[in-house]
Every structure is written in C-alpha cells, then in structure tokens.
Length: 257
Image (cartoon, rainbow, N blue to C red):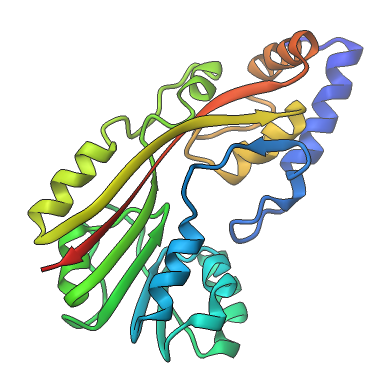
C-alpha cells in the first residue's frame, strides 16, 4: 500500500518498537504506555502463602523466573521450574541457579504434555499462564498436594484479535473446560474464580511491542503486513485518545485427594 508522509513516519517508528528485545515475561518497557486492570486476587500472594508451607514445589512455565524470584524468601529447599522457550530457559537458569532452583527445559506446552518427574514428587505445583496436563499434575503431586493456577481465558483479547481480522485461537479454553479436566484427573477443586477487565494502550507503538512479545494473539504479526490495521488503530487513538481491549483471566486451586 502507498503511504503518505505521516504514515511513513509512523511506519518507521513502529518498526523501531517491533525491534525492541523482549525477555522473560517483563513488560516494563511499556509499563507507562500500557495499563492493565488487575483481577480481584493476587496470584503472587497466593503462591507465596502456599510456598511458605511447602516442602517440594514445581513451577510450570516459569518464564524468566519472575514469580519464583518474587517469593524466593519463602521457598522450600526443593524447588524445580519448567520452561519451554529456549531464551527464557537460559534467563531463568541464570536468575534461579544462585538460589538452588533447577530449571528443566520442556517441549512445547500443551494439554497432553508429559512431565519429566517421578510420581508424587511435589506437594505443590504452581502455574501462571502455561498450558498443563491435569492428569500429569495429579500424578506428580503427593496426596493432599496443592495445585494453583492462573490462566488466560481463551476468549481473552477477543476485540484486539478482531481489530486484525482474527479470532482467538483457543476459544474453547474456559474455566468450565478446565474444571472438567481437573475434576476428571482426581483433583478436588477448592475454589475457582473468573474475571473480565480492560487493557489500555496509550499509543500504537506500545501495542506493536506487545503483539511481538505475545505472538499468539495475532500469529505472524509484522508491521509491514499489518500496516493497514495499525493505521486504523491510529485513527481510533487520534479520535479517542487511547485503545481499550478486553482481558479475561481465571484462577483455581485444587487438592489431590
């Protein structure tokens, strides 16, 4: 498409944002340009409380080890983390090894993934935003062991996907779907909550950075190939002053009976 002088200037600015490196699960680069409402619970606070009474804990999909680092002061002697994304495996190892926490690289996470751990090895499994196999979680938990997970609902960012002519890839992945899998695995759900809020971008460049960091929202996203959509969003922000999109999360705690 032919670009005006203004559009060319926007293009080059957005290309710069697209090229900014992203590490771990750290969005501090756009923290003053992307405002995300918080759910009425604190996953970190819950994980901290459970970790303080644990003897052996597993963190599924640790990213760059952010959660484990934030609660390291209450960690038990045995803590193991898994991660699938190679750059994050390296980063998490560098960050967590000084605290004696092993980081195990796993294959791509999915709902059927096998865990490379012995039966009943852990009394706590925590998981923030990583796919899990409920049967495997139950297998590696000791009797009375606890599973805590916060998940992104499959309908998350529905309106953001639509702005790029897309539909969310995992619409089926809802709290009800996960509850069915959890309960059929031999785990007893103690509580479960879901939440819907907003995520607000102050400029399109921040959105570009976000879409590169979270590539499953708009698969194959590039400034060049999605310029028309980005310009329409720029028109929206010129009219409304910001871009607001929906967020959906849920959290649950279950016990192995």
